[in-house]
Amino acid sequence: MTFYQGMAGTASRMLARFGQAATLYRPVVGDYDPATGNAASGAVILYGHAFDYDYSQRDIDGTLIRQGDRRVLLSVEVGMQPETGDKVVIRDKCWDVVNVKTIGPEGNAVVYELQVRA
Image (cartoon, rainbow, N blue to C red; front, side, top):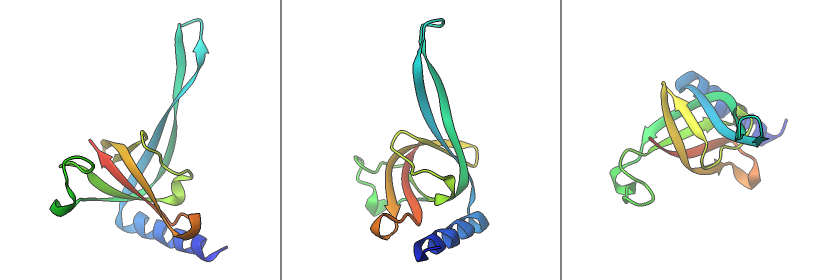
């Protein structure tokens, strides 16, 4: 186990203890289905823990960060890096992922910081 894997484990345990359950949802469009005339669809659904909180008023510029946007710290236990366009469900509320920042040195993810919007 590397040092950063240990840090990621600690962050995941803290989010599990002090945060709440979170679901990362990534819509997936599959191949064209000639029987229905549509593309098959599905989703990748992963589970983890998160902590969400408001942006400070000074951070809200009305363009990149809007009133009502929230920050989410998401554990790496979800198993894949979130992307813009994913959805996160926390406390039965679904949020669209607007921006993703990986926190951790040299590409070693310790936790993901998401900007989410209702």
